[in-house]
Length: 126
Image 1 (tube, rainbow, N blue to C red):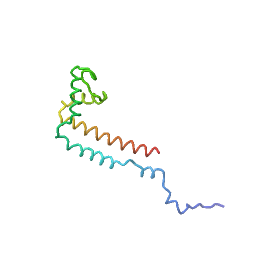
Image 2: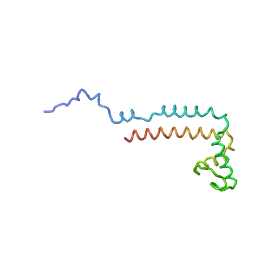
Image 3: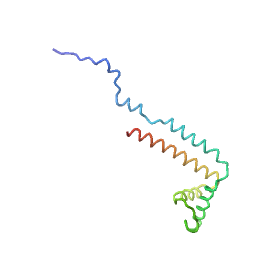
Image 4: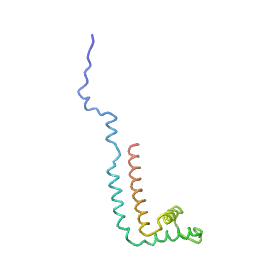
């Protein structure tokens, strides 16, 4: 005697693991909006004069590039990485105020994107 097994009525309600993963996808739209807002908030500063911090970092980076010793002849109380960034950006772009502000836009947008990526990855790992 053979019996036919019928599927229970709640089978349609069971969510497959693949479908569940699709609902937990990374929120690309949120990242695009956040990066866009970051760029828009900084873009208005493209035409304003440099602050004393930005101008000072550039002056120290240029003195360092011209042969002065960092933290003795060219003094600033900031880490070398920041000055390396200004020095490289000055060599690549000429160091105009607009170029320095563009650097702030690029690194600010990447910081927002990295923060959101890290948050999403941490949420998926949990």
